[in-house]
Amino acid sequence: MADELEDCSMTTDLGWLASEFPQLLGISPLALGGQKWVFTCDCPRRGPCVLKLIRPGAGKYLDREIEAVQRIRAIRSGNVPQVYEIGSLDSQMGPLVWLLEQRISGDDLSELISRGPLDKQAILSLALDLTSAARDAESVNVVHRDIKPKNTMVDESGKAWLLDFGIARILDLESKTRTGALVGPHTPGYSAPEQFRYQKRQIDGRSDLFAIGVVLYEAVEGLNPFVQGARDRMEILRRVECVPLPALDLPWDEANEFSGFVSSLTQKFPHQRPKNCAAALNWLHEIVSKLGGS
Image (cartoon, rainbow, N blue to C red; front, side, top):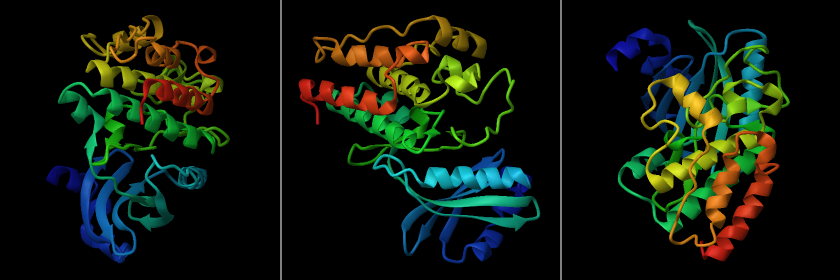
């Protein structure tokens, strides 16, 4: 951590941060690197929070980042941490965008999966929570683009929260990735083919549905078949593009309705998936009702 602090000393100078944010207590580094720095802190008015600093560049890039953060703040969801405040400030590194966000305590989904299979109720709850989060983001034209176990926090009550909108696409704002780029922002093994191929016009809420389907499969089986045993990144992407996700076989899903839902989400082409996240959520509610889920 000491080396990281030296590499970006301005944004990790806790004394400087304390002077810029006197209302925040106990500011402590959580994740540092790239163009974003994340800190935990406590706010007497809000409770446990996360402070994020983003270095977008000057001019139109700063304005674009502020617009994007404002849109993420507009998401109203019981499964997405609330963004309390946003702003910008000057530093020796140039202009920074900051946001103060609700801090969620719990375990990330990858940790839970590593401990063993999730039971029926946990799987159905996870499916509802992630699809609800994607539906709520979709309602304000936000595509998360990085849904995966590491970005899914499960709190003590069992509720799943979708974290880290750092590479989110705001559909009605100018894209930060140049048109004509061969590869778009993605996590191999979770992102849909149209996303890593950066087929910009095809990227929408259905891309998030693909990732949710992969996450649900992994939560059931304990592994991601696109990633498991792959030699390299290119093999993972080839599998995502060409190899169907195996069908789930669950003892509590005799009619294969939940399995069919996961299969539908992970179809290779967007038009083969539910038409949007809202439609997927409605379908899922029907399935959960039949299966006796919460």
